[in-house]
Length: 73
Image (tube, rainbow, N blue to C red; front, side, top):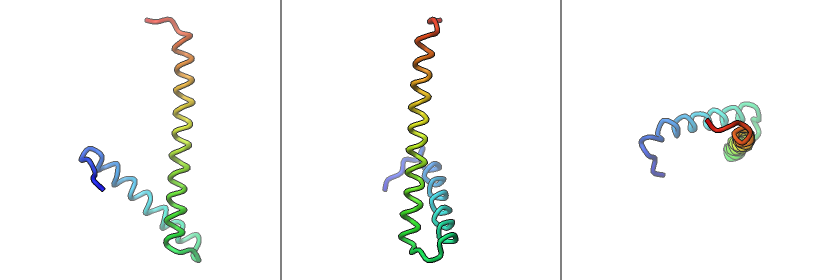
């Protein structure tokens, strides 16, 4: 994986979040394999990302409606 220098800090932050999530799942569900915990961590990240995208879309729609109602300055 090639990481752009301007994205390095973001990638490291996400990596730490994923590692912590995996550790949290390992502690909470001691019977699960590492692979199971990794899958659950990835699913959690994916759901969080999707929620953020949907909230962003709703915000964009809201702003679009307001910009149509307000007179141009």
